[in-house]
Picture 1 (cartoon, rainbow, N blue to C red):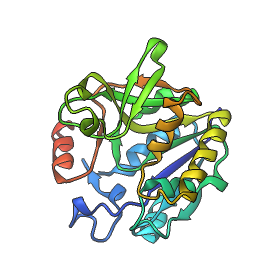
Picture 2: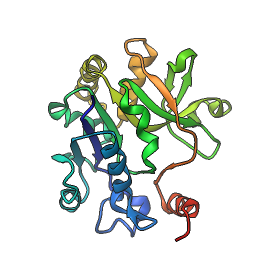
Picture 3: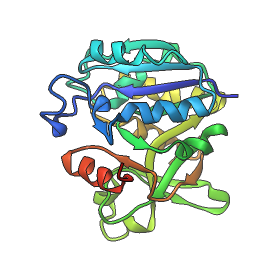
Amino acid sequence: MITQAVLLAAGTGSRLSPMTKDIPKCMVRIGGRAIVDTLLDALAELGIEEVVVVSGYKSEVLESYLRKRDEFSWVFIHNERYATTNNILSLQVATDAIRAPFLLVESDIYLQPQILAPLREVDQMIVAPYTSDMDGTGVMVGAGNKVEEMVIRAHLAHPDTFTSMHKTVNFYSFSEATWLKYRQALDRWVAEGRLDQYYEAVLAELINTGEVAMQASNVGTEGWGEVDNIADLKALEATLPKS
């Protein structure tokens, strides 16, 4: 049983300014609730007991807020270089606190609890159909829902064909064996100074070379939404039931 989750929450959320002037991005409210609370609700349903939080911007505010959720035990790790590096470092600074199997989740995605249900099994990644209004990492899914290829910024790498892929939703489960291989590669990338990269790029390298295998769980386009800017927030709010 997976009982630990790692929550990446270091970003500045500058594209949501001025809403993020005094709070981190994940505390922005949609439909009256903080984005991060919808994620924590889903983690609680999965039986997660400990959450390792990697913070950066407004870390004290976030820690104070999260500690009110007493159904979890908390480990807080501050990425001091959050403003000048990508999320590859946020994951790397948490490695000593990670006990596989575990879940890796990003904090800026509003969701309904069922979205994380496939992560009860190890070596899963949540994906959705890659529509023309999305951007980010794409995957090619083969027989048995095996991830055959992972492409960073697929909308730019394959602008004519990316909609034939699935898009990662930035939620993963790692087995002990997969984490061991991933951590070795992660440490190597950081030692090489590749701090401008996404942690997904490390996983893409391992999947594309056949060193690790992961399954894709397609959750569709409803019930979740990544919140990068004001337009994303308004679009999500428009889908919520009116009170």
